[in-house]
Amino acid sequence: MRFGVTANPKSSQAVGATKKVIDVLRREHEILIEQDLAVVLGETGSSLDEMSIDHLVTVGGDGTILRALQMGDFNILGVNISRVGFLTEVGLDDMERVLEELAEGKFYIDERIKLKVRVGEKRLPDCTNEAVIHTASLAKVRRFKVSVDGEMVSRIEGDGIIVATPTGSTAYSMSAGGPVVDPRVRAFVITALAPFRQTLRPTVVPADTSVVVELFGPGACVMVLDGQQESELKSGQTVHFTISEKKARFVRFSRTFYSKVNEKLMEGPAP
Image 1 (tube, rainbow, N blue to C red):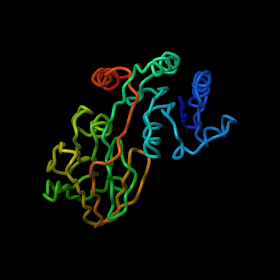
Image 2 (image 1 turned 180 degrees about the vertical axis):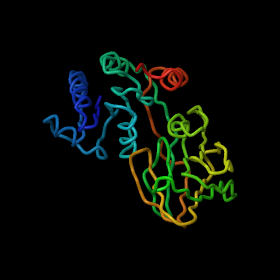
Image 3 (image 1 turned 30 degrees about the horizontal axis):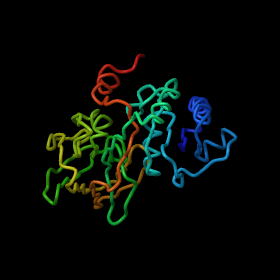
Image 4 (image 1 turned 135 degrees about the horizontal axis):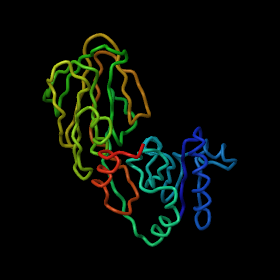
């Protein structure tokens, strides 16, 4: 098999763990290492968006996975070295076992829908988790109008709006009071951030609809996509959210969504 490897090159913990992952992979497989990481490791690197590979191994946590999914179309095998790592699949000590199971075909690909984001005619990177529109200034309320398929859902005054996929329903949206959505459900969750009036409860809409958020009143907002990409939004601008033609794909060895919810989100990691 041909594997790509990526991690945060600025994290000494991630770099150390990646060295162990590479040692295991190289015994029987070809590997490509992302450029910035390769420099730190003293290796020859490849651009992530140009890799032709069977699977991409991400070493770190959810942020590393979300960044990779914004840069390319991969089967993600997430190796967790973070405290939570909800999207990751295995621990560092599991690599040898995992490679054996991959070779024997004892895995499946967990496909998740992604969120397509446009501001005007400009398409921005797709989101696996969520798009967050929030005020650019602390303690400043902004006004938004939310529509679904051209029908107004609500006018909101508050800190912002989250539009999340089922994958992202267990992230920022859940912290803001949104529901947990099984990733097999094709839907989006719209959640208001600290609304001044309760004009919009967390709302689940079909993923085949078009969700539009319009900004009103003075003052700028910032839109953050999967915690990775930021862009400024001005009053009067409109953001369109639809389902992407692309999918997020994760290498899985067992169907563990609800056990992960209980272990990582309800009980929480050990202090």
